[in-house]
Length: 415
Ligand code: ZN
Ligand code: ZN
Image 1 (cartoon, rainbow, N blue to C red):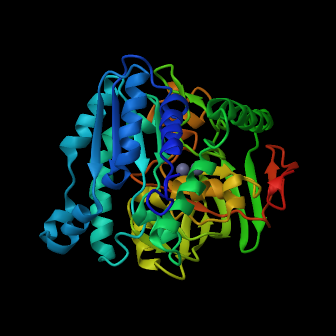
Image 2 (tube, rainbow, N blue to C red):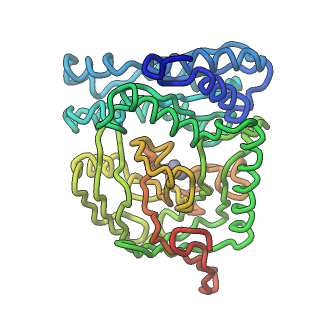
């Protein structure tokens, strides 16, 4: 029997996760190339994903790896103007690959607080330069040209942040268990479990799309927020079809149904219900007030400088690009773990995202031009940052075009 202290992450579960990421997450097609980004610490999963991809008939799998120590070396030693630069050549290459129908997988597993001790100005500049350079590649993801997915690998650096009071091997084992459970790969047949989960999410989006609400009114502790929905918005959740015809699950895990708010029709105040881990910093106690869709007041108990820099990224950074509904009974919420990673934490609570909208969240969105998306109320920005506003006390009313109200959530659950 393997000693848990020597191998806190089950190789068998990593194999299942790799298989699910390729078959359910990407639905990789025979002959399709795969561009894979990951931290070096996630190599055990990267190698298994490559094997699963080639078993599924992948053309060429190209991993692009980042390393925490290399990232820190920049902050310690680079000249000041380094922080306004980004590897645009690499992102142009990724965009070219997506243009030729390569699939995209991102494996997350970085230390979420890696940059917490660094100069927030430099972190923001580097983040902005990176976001600008990445835009051509991101556009192909945001417009859903190709099948893509994000999955997570348990890593020691991440585990130490999530379970700071446990010895390293126990922390890693706990994080691994939580990731495998949330990613729905612990059952006998993960593919069948995902099929059932996708069907349940589809029933929710079907109901919301039939209602065609003009707005959602959120109330709860510290929250009185009316989120107008974009004209011709469409709800999505779980599996979706990319423009290349492949149905994929863009996030593993996923518990949300989401759509596009109207960039100019959001009113009221809201307080974050969970801390936001953003670019290596923790922003806690966010409170904002919206007028005509724009954040006109913002503060945070901790990390306020990072929040303000984020809001100043560009004009669209103060407006919403996503609203998402997640019941408090979601397995990730019930696990009670703050993962410090959006892929997980956004699936534990209702949330909103500042910045770029998904053009796919419109009826006929695939054929809309950027101008048509803007006319319907879709926001555009170089950022897309989700933060959590829901909890056990969240009530939501759907407001129809004639002003009538329908309960959508009561006490954090579907009404
Ligand atoms: Zn979301
Ligand atoms: Zn989002």
